[in-house]
Image (cartoon, rainbow, N blue to C red; front, side):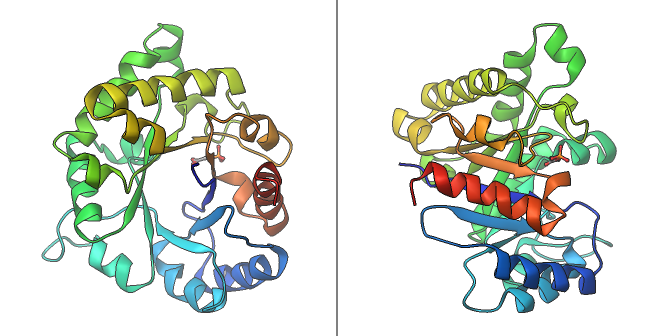
Length: 257
Ligand code: PGA
């Protein structure tokens, strides 16, 4: 049984003080249980204040939104895996489509970032997804398989046991036009088939695959109703306490707790 994960990608939103206020509200509002995992990914500058605001008793986890593949050195403006670990992150989002499109991140670079995450015990949430043009040209499977092949090259099943994948169709991100659950399920199945073919059935069955792209409290249940969809990576709707917490509530309900 895969534990559902609801992750909030804050992107470049909230100052450290706004983030602390938000985190305190979230702790009060969310009923956490071991049945699901809730993770938030504030900007680097807010990780420390969020960690303190969450306190030691909260089970809400922390994620970085990116990292550099080296541990340290002359990389102005970058942040490494040990730095994220030291601030209490358990997770890191890698390969988000905004990083790919706006910052030129390619699969070989994402592979090096994944290696850094594995090396330091940070659990990566790897984002994959096709553009509208690619979907309309019938290339969705080929694009997803190419992203997985390039970014997961050379890793063992033991390393990949730490991995969560987020299927985020580019055309659904921030557009208010979510994929249908059927579209998401079909790509999730493609991802599992890929993992089974390249590694093992155990890895394919054990890997969490989230859906991301215009997830809201209104549409979240339709995704979470499927056994193929192990949670959500939420952007816009994670910036208000009530909408993010109610998506987490829906995930909790699905587990029957
Ligand atoms: P969205 O973003 O929920 O605003 O579409 C999702 C994401 O980019 O992870």
